Length: 285
Image 1 (cartoon, rainbow, N blue to C red):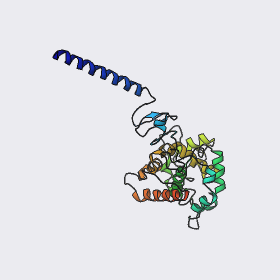
Image 2: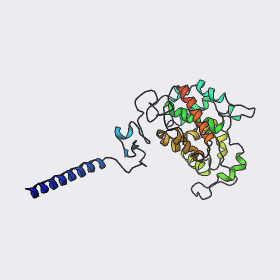
Image 3: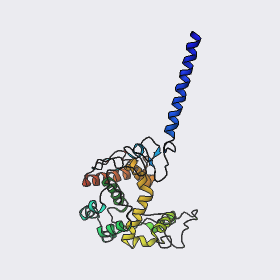
Image 4: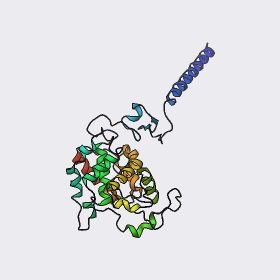
């Protein structure tokens, strides 16, 4: 009887093991690729680091991809809240409250960056505002404020003297044009030949040959900022504002430039307050 009991227990344990494997196989058969994500563009990265397209992946805690807004309506969901009207949120009052803080007599951006130019660019680049939240709007303008000092600067300060540093000669897809300089220009300060090249390609503008156009056409300038945001920043936004700092200038992170990081966070908190939305977690990088 003792031997029979042991045999029965082993069989039961084996059956349980097989059942467990079966359910694990069913779980893995869901649209999961690998832990920590790196999902395809139409898949969400869940809070646990897996890829999928259901509410479990795209709902609360979603990190990247087409995350749901969280359904709160107040901008506090994992993706920054429900989508809002870009034009209805970025009013002339909100826009001008930023640029009015630009100081100095040499503030070229004061007559360059206008609310009308912003809206015209948004209408021409609809993917930027098609599913944007108040929190993401606050994040975008926080970085614009920092990069341009309240939209005062169109071009990077001392840009021509730093021009050589922005030519990646190993990038053969978008080689630097003779005599052209790829220092920072526009609301996000588009920099480097490969960014000018890719952005120009996507906007149907030959910015590799004429990078100076970003500082000459305000609508185009805003469109380059929208391009950089949707291409390089938006996918990180669900991880918190800190992830957007890293996406724009990771050299500031990990304690290397705490003052600058805190300045960006300060702008973000300010604009979240003006738009009536909480800034959320993970503000620093």
